[in-house]
Image (cartoon, rainbow, N blue to C red):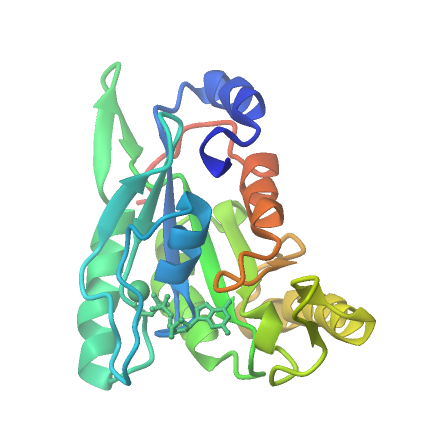
Length: 227
Ligand SMILES: Nc1nc2c(ncn2[C@@H]2O[C@H](COP(=O)(O)OP(=O)(O)OP(=O)(O)O)[C@@H](O)[C@H]2O)c(=O)[nH]1
Ligand SMILES: [Mg+2]
């Protein structure tokens, strides 16, 4: 059950900063699988997944996995210039959402989770999101990256259907990919990220690693709004 997964660890980490809950903004290109990722984590359909050609998620919506973790699903960039402009603004507004505690102002979003579509090599939309939306408006050390669609990373080859996991060839490809993403994000944006995890939202593969990434990298302090 993902709802209770490592709940004691989460609780311990949360107590340090008294988050209630920890707010994670999930971003990425359109079709990367942000909504699918939330459905996989929640183990039920909470957010509509795109089935056609058009981008699916239009608004930012929040979903609580439990009392400790809240995820914000967002529209993806990369569909149209006009869409990118509108959605970038919505995301930036979200990064400046605030609340007050003991007369101190804090940012609502504690962590940004960037979902990368693992089926291709194109990092353009990810760079754009980081360079134009996130980095100028959010603390760099609160950015996590995860690679989705691990099942399709080699165009569907080397996925072991029976065991529902990558075979050795795909596994080593995915491991290389995590390293390549680290260095490419560094080159393209200047941000040093933690080593990403890979998973498949559609197949329910490695979802726990994705949760581990979040739990192991939870910020220990509330977030000050950057000026
Ligand atoms: N094979 C495979 N397909 C996936 C995976 N994750 C998502 N998809 C498919 O990718 C498409 C887009 O998924 P969504 O979850 O709607 O993507 P999104 O990032 O929320 O897209 P927008 O809301 O348009 O920004 C759907 O057809 C999903 O079924 C995955 O892990 N493997
Ligand atoms: Mg979506």
